[in-house]
Amino acid sequence: MNLPRLTTALLSASVSAAALLHAADAPKPIRVLILAGGCCHDYNAQKDIVKKGLEARANVKVDVIYTEDSSTKPNLPIYGNPAYADGYDVVIHDECSADVSDPAVIKGVVKPHLDGVAAVNLHCAMHCYRIGNPGEPAKPGTDRALWFDVLGLQSSGHGAQKPITLTVTAPTHPIMVGWNGWTTGNEELYNNIMVWGDAKPLIRGTQDAGNLPGRNDSVVAWTHEYGPKKTRVFSTTLGHNNATVSDPRYLELVTRAVLWSTHHLTDDGKPAAGFGAGGK
Figure 1 (cartoon, rainbow, N blue to C red):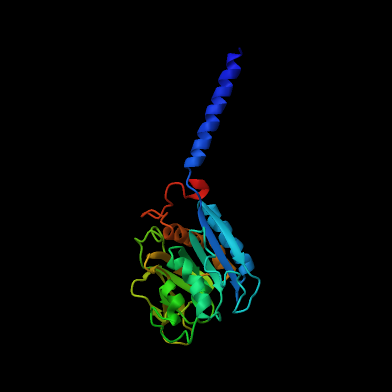
Figure 2: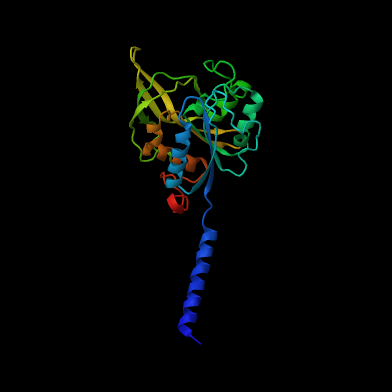
């Protein structure tokens, strides 16, 4: 009997078994679904920027549903399918569907979040699924507020593209721990028609108002709990231009939002064990 070879084989088998056990014990990646497409933005590039940025920073598996339709009524295939988020932990809404206003369609969009699937909403998602005049405050709990109830904030428009000075207003929130404010390149500062009472502003933005007196000042990032299951929701109005979406600070913000919304972010702003880059 060749003992050295037998010993080597046994050691190899032990190592393989240990590796299999470790793989079985390793946390499964967070399942992320990005919805992208619609009016006014380079979604063809931005969907990939966000996907790659998330997968480089956290233990996530990102799928994308994208339409090349650049109208204000993009033909996203999820419309009419309230089960579109089955199997996912969080949906990133990065669509711009400003004129999709059928209450039945909108109820299908919000259904997964009503059922507990987390939401992370980027930029023009705030101007989607509007019924009636978005400049008039919507009453929570009504059809006009179907989407605003998810967001926790109502916005109707923005001014010119100019740099936005960002100030962190909740420095102890896990998403914001360790962050300092910064100034963006040219971006759109969305207005605030209403902020829901339980929304938690994280970042405010100010922008040179040109010939208007003073400066514009709005909430640009916040958290909210939606529905009876207290579904975690994060939103930011930042992200019009590719330069902003590619900024490591923006991608880190979105990554932390995904981790926080799925209960995988520690109080000190770090990924929970097994949910950092490479499963660390």
